[in-house]
Length: 384
Image (spheres, rainbow, N blue to C red):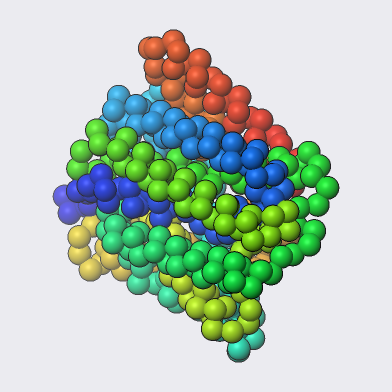
């Protein structure tokens, strides 16, 4: 009776919009200028413009699924109800494997940000990751996404501040790296296009976000606002970076920062952003782990919170160890991203729409989304 298993159902649509932005925007925005240089300004803007409604459409497909099945919380839940238990188990595997690998990658990037912040001390990546883990301990105690609304706004503000610092440096003292947009082969073009496509990717936990909303019928407003803000930011970053260096735009805007106060400041800002982004993902994964293995961790007393602390800390240390000890970890992250993120963002939402929609045109459009997802999965795998 004391369990707090049900979502909070208190999130406003504006708070949900902030949560979507914090989850979706990431370090990938720092690479958009380089990707624009790879495919060319005009074609890059066309691709970026096309990715906006494409991702918005798949997000709205998930909203339709939630409106029909308001009790489902994850992609696995929805697949279990609409397709069958075996497909549901596959959905759980894809979703939580993808989230775990994303969290492990966040630990690496968080370690890099800590190193950048403390560059004068020349600490190792493992040490930096452990420092990041210590900073994560208090944030990991949030057990609902609704508790992260204010932090989501702070997270987005830190990303904007980092972008402004990088762009100001690039425009006032251009540091254009030759060779960032080499011969423009198919694989390089495909990789750049995928970067634009997945710059809006956050659909894998949008069902979780909806069940925490006060009025889930307002989710379209939340996702439209979030994606519009992201599109405006992405366009601004791409245009300004391309204006400064054209085809020699750096693949990562952080590379333009010299080893002075700007590097440490950007490192501190990215640390704050990554702390929040990791916390959003870990909340979804650890809540699922506790629901299955240790429901008492979702209770209301001190004992429950101690159990939650143990679960989140164990998962965090596992991410840290996997990220630092597994050989070729970055290649593994890229592979799982190509194979799993495409399913969470396009294929699985498309499947759910095909089997649940009565409107023929929506089923046809959803089938097209599935085809796009398979193409991106195959091309992304070959790029790796």
